[in-house]
Image 1 (cartoon, one colour):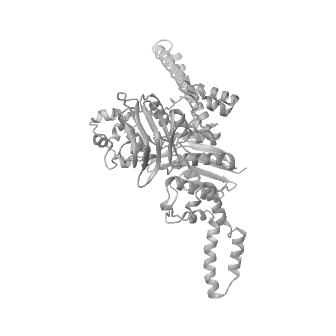
Image 2 (image 1 turned 180 degrees about the horizontal axis):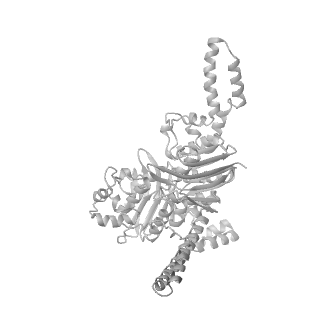
Image 3 (image 1 turned 135 degrees about the vertical axis):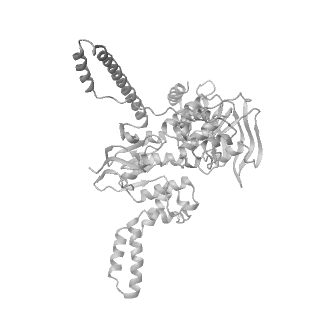
Length: 566
């Protein structure tokens, strides 16, 4: 059976150990999630497997010579190409033949020799050279990028680039996929499409790095956790099963470690007790036995991240009200008829990329004026705003100076205490922000926002760049935050934990709905009206919904959702 046999003794870069011992086999149809904390070497592992990194100690055996399709986080080198030309490059052999044919045409004109030219044309026909352009258009329509084919890559957005890169990989027809953060920068609809494609259409295997826990749950059946210098740990099952099993392994390992430590302490006490007495021989015998015991390492638990969200006094009941509003930049983008954000609601703003959800947030902050209509912000509203682009951070300044720039005039010692909750050390305070990774910048911005009192959090893609444990910590902090939360997110796991309401931007209008991602998906699959609540305020089943679904189906949904909500 075709497989990859991966054996890495170690990989170092700039005298630092990046990967320890990695030894495992990947079969042609395996569907594997690669997980681990930010910075542990997940992308490095994929690049070694793809043979983009060669200076490592070890071997990669590709039994069966499987072709590997690699989707990386930065996709294109030449952005002056059109999308069509980029997709055509997936057919490397055909494209090479085209160049050879063009060269032979010149030779044919000069010499009249046609044998080599005829041979190349036959190869071109055999490889479907005259029809591969149709294949490009077919896949482009399928993925939803047909309208971009004639545009240069420099003019397409980040989420469109991800879809283009994926289309190129599929056109190259690899035997196995290596996908590095495939859901980054694409909208929810595209994530759902990719998820369904991998589940139902793709017949071969893949390895995926992703922080989208819902995506991993649905697409992967084995988890490899990269543990830096400690190598890897392998778990069978999807992401949720991995989390449960990891907890069990940690608890079991901790119990064995504590039992051994108790045994060692008892034995050492016994040895010390008898060493100076007539039973010194007994003490030496016990000491020799003690030396033969293989000592267990204390199970390592990653630094506990603790988000701090400072809450101020309650504002009025109505936080923000819209009435006949046009949200706009250069031209009208979408319309809001009559929506009110109430105190303590947690609202998920949902819509495809390109519908200008972030513009809505900037309108709430008075950074962009309304084109028309009326928006009222209630009294005593204090907003803490998190931007996925981190505009508030001054990259040329140090972490310490960024706090001072925001009016937080704390001492080094006090700041070290604050940043310690986010995994930073005292020595990090003088680091310039431009030297930090995106996930470190995200945590720094949350550390700054956490020092400012607020009663409404406005969050634009807050889980982007954060690893799994940090996302869990953020979710727990937001759930405990007593104020109002308004957020944009493509992280369905996060949405399910946080949201109570939805603002849905669709067909150039924003409407109100109720619930979280599960509610949204349920209504979408059954063509139900989004503005129809599954439950009323007392958590009873909506009678209109019950009539539409039928008694039996309504009973099933009541049991499923009401139990979870309570």
